[in-house]
Amino acid sequence: MYYNNQRVKIENIEKLFSEYSLDIQDEVRSMVLDGLDLIEWVSVCKDNPYRLNQIRLAMKEGVDPRFFNISDGRVLYSLRKYLKSGFSGEELYRFVGCGFDSEQWEYILSWAEKGYLDKRLSLVRTPKNLWSLIDKGLQNNLPMWVFTTGRNYSVSEMNSLITIMSNGHDIDKFLIGSWRSDVIKVLGEFSRFSWYKKVVGAVYDFISLEFLLLIGELAKNKVIDADLLVAYKGSQGERGYYLYQTYHLSIILQAVQKGVDYTKLKDYNLRESDANVILADMIANRSIPMKGRL
Image 1 (cartoon, rainbow, N blue to C red):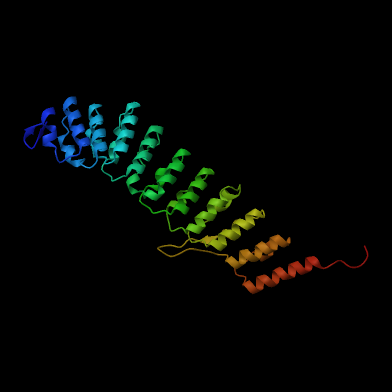
Image 2: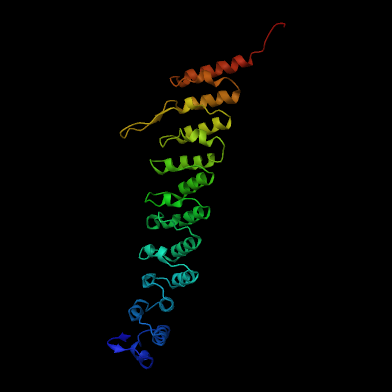
């Protein structure tokens, strides 16, 4: 091992590396004793003797030099422990040079140890603030690779989508289109109900939050009527819409809650004022007491 064109020996380490700390000099001394040539890493780790220590030990243990580019000595220590457990490390090569910090590497090593590192899991496309949620999903054996395609998700959206999957439902339709985060949140809450599958098929990304909430209230009142959810999906960039408007569903919900026949309101051409008159008449007629003798 040579430094500044001079062969490094135990006797000249202090002189050759006088500008380095004693800890670095000790590591160089150990390199000489171990017969390891890591001189290129001495200047790289000038202010980080612990990293140099872990690189030296890793090289001594036969760790692939590609991992030496990991800048945090604590991660290298965890990596060494991982490899000593019998793993080859090949599954980790693709993450070297991606700029992951120590916290992210600890996630990666944990997932690798537990067998969670699906090749489809593109972590380089995943913002760091979502990694804890990726971990949450992987711990529950969910296919979290679907969130690592480069699409941006908020913490709230991903939490809700994880809830939907955890309740045994498919989320493919929510991974395309332009879904509002408040709509996704409500769908996550709805996914625990037995009627969820009966209504979610008629839910599209153009649905309003108010319309969705009314669908939920009707379902909770045991009214799941496909006619009320008929929609024009739009074409060639045209935004879709539901044939029934929010006021229709609101008035129909009132009819259900009042115990009158809501089907008399099933006409999407009804104006709001007309629908309200029909509802008022049904409630009034129901309330008229019978007169005369039987």
